[in-house]
Length: 209
Image (spheres, rainbow, N blue to C red):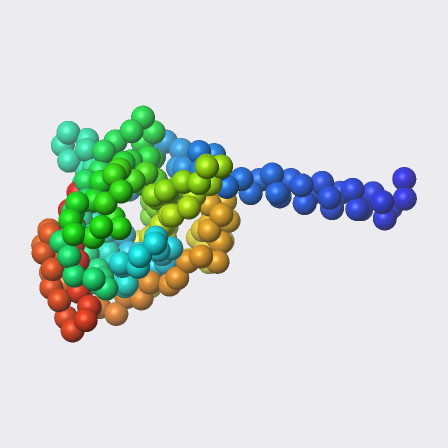
C-alpha cells in the first residue's frame, strides 16, 4: 500500500477516534471512580470557573468540605458575588459517591431550577479537583446550561502536571476554552452561613450545605 494512503488512513482513524472520544452526551461523562470524601475533605480554592446562564460568582471563591460522623459531607463556601441575595445549598447523596444532587434556596431565581447534578469529575485529593454541574439538557442529552469549578489546594494555582490533566478533562466535558481564571486578592468575607456583606456594588456570599 502507498505510504501516503496508509498515512491518510491512519490520520483519519485517529481523527475518527478523537471525534468518538469527544462525546458530549452528559450521561457519558466520566466522574472520579471510588470517590473518597474523607480524602477530599478540607479547604479548596477555585482557580477557574465556567459560569452558568446569569453570572453570579466573581472571585475569591473558597470552599471547605467536612465529613460528619454519620458519613454525610457538608460544605461551606465564600467568595464575591455580583448580586446581593441570600443563598443556601443542600447536598444529597446518590448511588455514585462522586455524584451529588444540589438544591439551591434563596433569592437568586436562576439558581432555583430544582436539584442540580453536582459531580466531582476528577481529583487527586492533594492538588486539584474538577466540579461539574449540568443544570439543563438539550433533547440530544448534551448540556444547554452548565457550570464548573476547577479547585486547587493552593490558592496560587495548579502545578503544570495538574494543569495538563485538567485541560484534558475540560475537553472531555466539552468545555475547553470556556473557563475564566478566578482571582484571589485576599478580599474575603467572614464565613457566616447565609449572611451577606455588601461592599460598593459587589457582595460577598457564604452558603452552607
